[in-house]
Amino acid sequence: MWKGSMAFQDEAAAKLLSSDLMELSLAVHKLADHAIKLGGLGFGASFFGLIAAIAAIYLLILDRTNWKTNILTALLIPYIFFSLPSIIFGVFRGEIGKWIAIIAVVLRLFLPKHFPDWLELPAALILLIVVAPSLIASTFRNNIVGVVVCLIIACYLLQEHIRASGGFRNSFTKAHGISNSVGIILLLVYPIWALVVILF
Image (cartoon, rainbow, N blue to C red; front, side, top):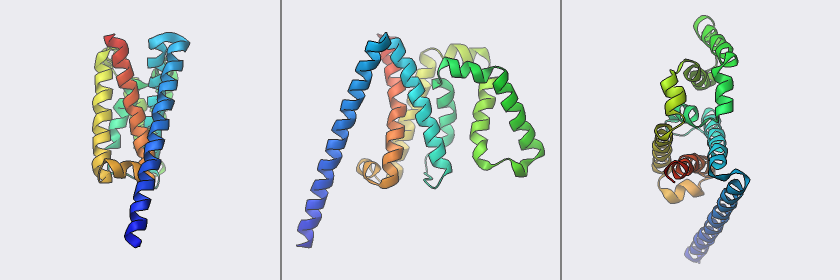
């Protein structure tokens, strides 16, 4: 009797997961369709870049809370650097970013007790944006090099997350695994879409 109920629960969980993945694919299809209608493929790349940057920031926040993972979240910093939309990147590369960077450096150097650990990676991102040479900040960011870097980082993080979860199925069925899985899948959408735009 007990084995029968376990099999029924496993079957019900598989059906539920299958229907959720089907709904997710339909939502992604509708999102892509609407993005193309709004402004063509180029707008879609900018939009997905924003979504990917938000997903990366979300994963950074998750890692700094109780949902700690074993994945190398420092890789999200170069990912955000390459996927951040140009308008936001320009703001942080200008005077605002310089002020934030100088405050972060002063706090870290002279008041290390008042500089929380969770600010390390965001401060590193701002410093990277401010001091990156034009070759990286302008040329590589806006062509296939930046897209390939984002794709490599997203694939690596997905692979590490699946391994840390104990398999593909567990990465979508454990409570904290689902949120991380969705965030990492969103990281994959931008570079794939940008490659389609660049190559076609």
